Image (cartoon, rainbow, N blue to C red; front, top):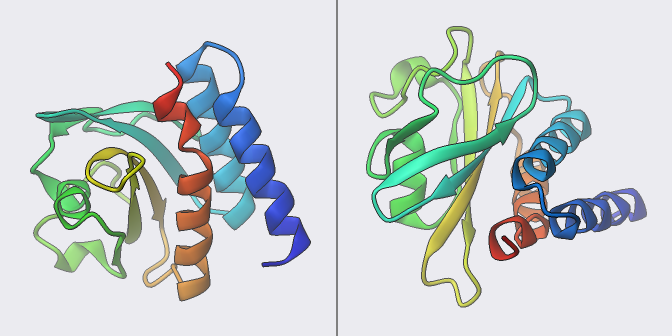
Length: 155
């Protein structure tokens, strides 16, 4: 991995572990990931036993579904699979919950608790371009989600 990405991942770890304001940390993380990949929108979600709820997001607008059942949508599918879900065109996927009208592609990366038994959060990234996420994007977002793990562990 290039040094620049290593530096970004260290920055993400530092943000996730700093301070006490979880919402402010999540906002900074979402904004950093958005800038890193020049994505349209990044959401940082908490996964509970029954529901998924947004902690914070990049950009000015909140999603239409700030909380939803953990079994619903593409995020619910990623939680069940315990692995990333990449959709090149959400218009053709019945699992998509239309949070933003101009989203065309999305990647959802589950954040696993240590030991990998339970999903405790997700990093959801949306684009207004179809097939926007390359394998490199997916790997980068996965690394960012793992680096952000302290956000869910340190409350």
